[in-house]
Image (cartoon, rainbow, N blue to C red; front, side):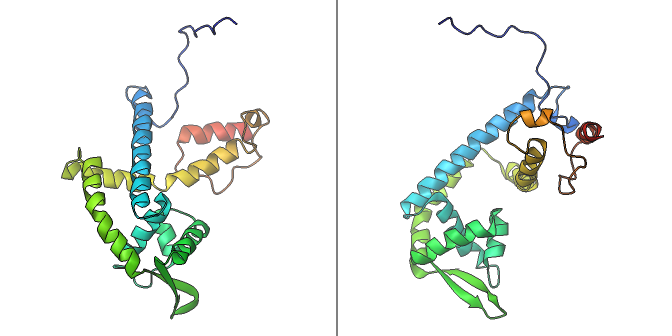
Length: 217
């Protein structure tokens, strides 16, 4: 079987973003490299989280939830599932399932909220506190190395940027589902619905909004 021929250099591929703020001299190269760097760092964080969780007998997700309950309950009165889910940018249903696993493992308690008996108050047990305290021997140096390249100014800048990006994922998924509801590019050829849904992201670039509007007119 003949080897696949290499694609000849020709017309440049379309830009992967239309936002002027993400283009450098009209190119999306820096944007794409940023995405790849973020993917690499996200994978590293996930791996570190999983390994830290494993050290105390938990999955990475369970470790994050347990640690968040421990920290948030110190500063939040009557910490509940909804507050925890919002903090972690996860669904309440998913957090409930994972919390129940931690309860079964004897690491979390759920008590009825005295002000609203339909809700529960979350707290960690002494066993959980012991495990998290012991874990700091590895957790602290791991975080020091993972974020070692950052100066104090870098850290504050990154904190602000990530806070802005943390909530964009769900809106982006809704947009993709709108553009290709069947999960294939063939959906685009079938045309878009007659009207744009109200829950689309409100901060889409004007160019993209214009393109979508032209398609549905």
